[in-house]
Length: 367
Image (cartoon, rainbow, N blue to C red; front, side):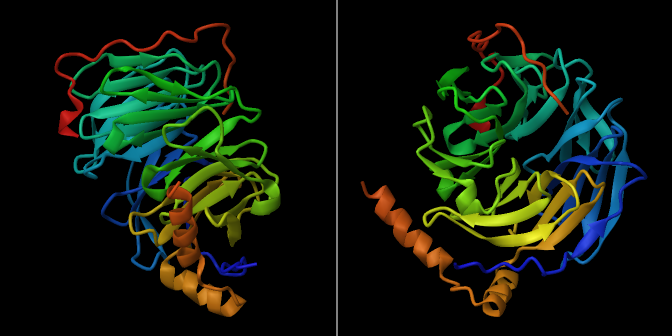
C-alpha cells in the first residue's frame, strides 16, 4: 500500500571498476557530482557523474592503502578525501594535487573499518576490535580514545549541532560520545541485534540503526537505552541484514540489504515505500548525493550502480504505480502528533576505558 517505487525502473549507470575490484566504501562530494569509492585492492577512485546520472567517468585514482580501503569520506568543504583501511592506516588526501596531506600508518591496533569527518580539522575512526578514535589533522596522535565496544565498529554518525559522535557495533550496543567534554555520553542496553549502520532522520531527532536481523531500529536522540520504535521485516519487505542506510528527506530513507535489493522506507508513517533497484549479491555500501537525487550502491557482485531517486523520478513512479503520492504530507502530520507529547575479532575486556581529554589546541568551537 502506498508503494511509489518500481523495481522495473532501470538503473541510470554502472560505474567501471578496475578488474576484480570490489567497492567497500562510497561517498558523494558535498557540492559537486563526484563519487568516491574505496576498493578491496587498497585503491580509491573518484568519478565524475553526469548531471542526469546516466554516466560516470574516472576523475582521479590512487592507492593509499596496502590492504582493502574500507571507508572513504569527503571533507565538509569537499577539498579533501579521508580514507581508512585494513592496513590500520588513515589519511586525508588533497583532491587538487591528489597527494596525501595527513597520514597515520598505524592509527589503530587492528583494521580500521570506518571513518567520518568531524568538521574542518577532525576525523573519527572505528576499528575491528571496537576502538573509536578522534583525530585532529593538525596533530599526529589521537586526541580522544574510546573503548566502549567489544567487537567491530560498523558505523559512525557525527551530529554537528550537538557535537556528539555515535558508534554502532556487532556487540549490540550504540555508544554516544560528547566531543566537547571528551567523554562517553550514553550507551544503549545490549540489544539482541548486531548494529550495522546508522542514519539520522527528522532533523536529527531520530537515529536509525540497521541490524543483522533485518530490523530497522529507531532511537530518539537523548534516549539511547533501547529502540523507541522498530520497523520489522514484515513492514520492510525483507528479513535480510540491513547493510547500509542513507537519508532521502526528513521522513524517508534508503536501505540496502544482504539480498542485494535497495529499498526505500518512511518513518511516521512507518512503511516500506518500494524497491529502487537490485544487485545479484549483497550490497556493501550506499551513498546519496547532496541534492538527494542520485544514489550509488556497491555490491559483492563487483558492481557500482547509480539510481535516480529524485523527487521527479519518484513522482513519475507514483503515477505509474498508482501510489498515493502523499507520503510526505502524512509523515509531517503524524510526526507533529508524535512530537507534541570484512570480520571483527571479539576482545576480552577493554570496555569502559573512556576518553582522554582534548588537547588545548583542539577546539570544536570552529565547527
